[in-house]
Image (cartoon, rainbow, N blue to C red; front, side):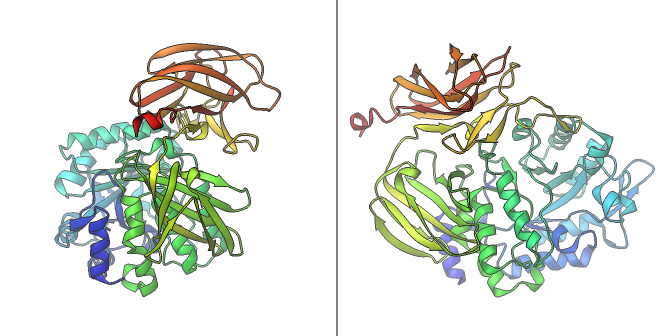
Length: 542
């Protein structure tokens, strides 16, 4: 893409000036996938130079993150030592160099005593290199003395020590705050969704094991698909400035061009941080064109802060993903038609699936072409392992009326204690009999194990009919709470493994409303969805 075209798209999508919003996912590069622990000062400087000279910094990639491989134990006073052979001028000098390029500098540490490199990559200097018992001392060094702007905190040592994740990451966040720096981007690298508490502690958090980085191997593509599947129902926990981290990108490291485009497209529509993992000094023109696609990047950087939902899945590899752009109630949608199969397939989307009515315009974000206005749907052939990534703008937006439980806030999802997930807590389970092929299960039996639908938007305050679809294991009950008003739902019964419904009249406020289902003393039914007649005043409010 020519530079003038890139600038035009960045301006069009609100990225003018090439400065990344604090509310949008981080963009940058990290050393681990390409170099592992074999890093040194010249490698990092070379990547910084390339990030600028190739135009990646202009495209929004600003953070240059130094991963594991530089530790050398601690001094007698407990201060961290850096490998002086690899980094002879020290970290302050290196950060100054990175900053001189107009970039931001990222650092790596560990929540426990010993780093991942000390356990798995032959780095004995990582023993006692973690932040455990050194939180404030290390935070002051990283951010006040050396001047770093980003911190990734791993959990190899923490896992061995069976530390409590919430306790450790909260303490580290407090230490960061105590430095007085308010611009630090903090990533918790726990290799699984750490629990809903993380959404107010970190700017991003890893929700999977490491991406498989064996260039050219089939395992690499399978690893990417596996991470997408793990992130399928984590959208409720993403918000402005807080994102599910799908790990570093493998674009330019052995996948096919179609797979590279699919990889980037899915990371963008799922609002993951975009952290490149390739060697920027040996990047092909094809790779550069893919990772600097301003229209695709703009989907990722949309400051609404939403993560895409899986709108439809045929169960055989064909998926439709979508999310609103430029506001939750806007008429704009980013869409990915994803063909995970081994052959090209014709795929379609209907405007009603996107809560749009009337005709809509379609733009192809990879070919940079306007495809025109269409009445009710769009069909195209999607290549094997490929995507069609589109921007759809409707004439009219319909209020969302169906709210799938798999996309509700499940308060105790992945609740952890001392490195173990606590059993008997709410989670999403696949169920082909449910409307979205999934349901929320293991809810209730304690006060904090509830489910909330947090984005029920009404144009008019008034009475609405709420229909709850559920699957009961017997005669169960739940408390329905709408904007603080409780209704006890008794005798929630269904046929075995079969969805049933009950209807309730509820009072909604104009604007956003929250619907909660809870049971502090017993198990609730599995929840499929709720549905409200939110568009019934539509003609009166045009």
